[in-house]
Structures are given as C-alpha cells and as structure tokens.
Image (tube, rainbow, N blue to C red):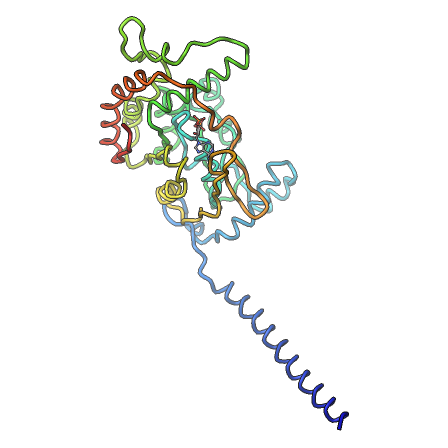
Length: 345
Ligand code: A3P
C-alpha cells in the first residue's frame, strides 16, 4: 500500500515537474519572440538619412558603453573601424546664453541615446585663431559617435559674438540652434557671480554688482557692462536672424529647466525630431545640491559640478527693479520674435 502511494506520488511529481519545465520553456520562447516582434522606434525626421531611420535606439543605448570606453581611451582603432564610429559635425548647437543653464541642457540632452555631446566648449566659431584652423580641425574635436546619432556642442560665447552666425551658416545653413535663456536680471547676476568667484580665487578685489550695473553718473542702467548687454537677448537674436529663419531656433526656458527639467527636454526632443527617450527616471532631485541630477542607469548617475548653482550675492532691490524695468521692452520683443512668452517680470 505504502509502496503504491510512493509510486503514485512520484508520478504526480514527474507530471507537475514536466508541466513547470514546459511552461518555463514556453515563457522563455515567448519573451524572446516578443522582444523580436516589438516595434523598434526609429529616429525620425530630418536628421535621419535613408536607412538611418531604421536604427534601433535600444542598440544605440547598448553601444553607448563602447563610446564611453573609447573616450576613456580603452577602445582600439580597430574597434572604431569595426563599429563604424565617426566624428561628425554637430547637427545642433547650443549657442547660448552664458549662465542660462547651457551645461545642464547639454548634459541632459546627452541622456538621449541618439545624442552625443562634445564635452568641452570648442570655441571654434568665436575664436579667430581656432576658426583659422578650418572645419576639419573642428570635426576632429567632435566625439566619436554612430552615424545614426547626432552630435551636439555648446559654446555660449557664440550667441553674443558678431562673426559667429555667418560662420555657422557657412558650415551648415540648416543647422538647429538652441538658446537657453533665464530671466535677464538673474542671468546678469549669475554672470557677475562667476567673474567674482574668479577674482576671489586670485585674491583680487572686485566691484559690487550694483556699481557695475548702474552708471554712477547717470544713475541709469550701464549698457556698457557686458553682463547687462548679454541679457538683452533680442539684440543678439536679431543679428542671428539675418542668417537663419526663426524656425531653426528653439528657445529653452532655463528657469524651468532648473525646477521642472523634463517638459523642457521633451520640447527639445521634439524640435530635434528625436523620439521621446528622456524620462523622469533619468532625472532625480538631489536635495543636497538643490538641483536635478542625471541618472543614466542603475549604476551611473551624476550631478553637475559645484560651479553650477552658485549662491548669488545679495543685490540692492532698487537695482534689481531698475534692471527689470530696463529689460522689460527687450523681453517683450524677444517673446514676439520667438513666439515663446516667458514669465519674466
Ligand atoms: P547659477 O550658478 O547662477 O545658479 P551655464 O551652464 O550656462 O553656465 O549655466 C549655469 C546655471 O545652470 C547655474 O546658474 C544653474 O542655476 C543652472 N542650472 C540649471 N540646471 C541645473 C542643474 N541641474 N544643476 C546645476 N545647475 C543648473
């Protein structure tokens, strides 16, 4: 009797075991085929040439590891050749504005698997000496990427430098141009804070912001002060519009990029004709830093350097009011030209 029961139990276990193994095998096969069947989102739009549009972004994401290794010097020339890595001229440039959040924007866009950033500011178009070295020199400064990816560089000095629009136009008249702006008075103070920090590092004294921003003789806003001039965005933009139509520009709200980066980045993805790939997962608020930081994956995340997000010195409120009043008509014009209204006072 006991023996019969044991045999029956063994047979039952065998059946159950086979069922479990069978189900497992079915699941593995199903998941595998699902993976293959899943539609792979192409990189759409003007950036993709024929064939490029079919490149799976997941593969790009996977291959980024190789790019990273290459930048660290861990990948051989042979591997570069094998993987078709190239140094491409930028398809989009963050042309400014200094202290608008240009670094944050570049780093955040670099979260997108189809974007590769030029880490350093190259200053090709604003620096005569660099410009004289020619376009090949510029291209060689670009990071390695896959042909389906787009390279983005940022040099905020481009926005305010006279010769730059024409030079960029000569390189690529259909290039996409990103401008990140902040409320003009805050940006001017941020600009001042950066210079002040540099002076302090060299043990030098510096004027107070109020003294630089307001002409002591006239008590009017000092338009000769560079930090003030840079914040007259419309004046600079008008020079650019002699070469590029407004459709080729995208305005990023730098103040919103600080508090709510994702929607701003999604607008940029759209402008660049990239499929939406940056998600809330990629951005997390770091309480210690007081800013959003970047999460590439479970292992790798980073915040911007400490030089981003400095504490500004206190500025006389009457000077702030005067500056805001001064910038107001220029801001209105800027909104009108760009079609983007920002909530500046
Ligand atoms: P402050 O230092 O005045 O706060 P840029 O990169 O063009 O020099 O701009 C610097 C500004 O980027 C900083 O100005 C900071 O406010 C802003 N910024 C935007 N997002 C940021 C982020 N996630 N981390 C740090 N700084 C950020």
